[in-house]
Image (tube, rainbow, N blue to C red; front, side, top):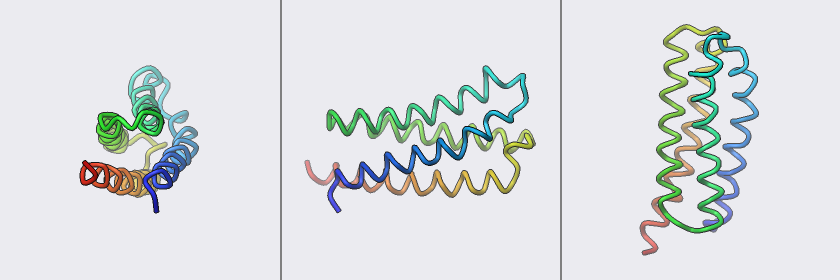
Length: 118
């Protein structure tokens, strides 16, 4: 599989995750609307944006920025789970974690491929 095909699959996987997580984020407590909810949404959107930028520019820093956004997403979802928000119960947290792990593996493969192509 080419790097372009991997990038396309990664892009779609992140987009699918957004479709999964958006309804859950909307169920966070109202007082979290402009803090945890927005931060989580923005981190995931940033991850997607950085992959798009990588696809257009082939600048490695965008892959690393996407990786940072991925880690932020994981931590923010973990926080929502630890705070016992109903929208991020054990089942949703487990599914989210699994989906983010898949994204991380795909992103890691692209990063390794790019690093070895020097």
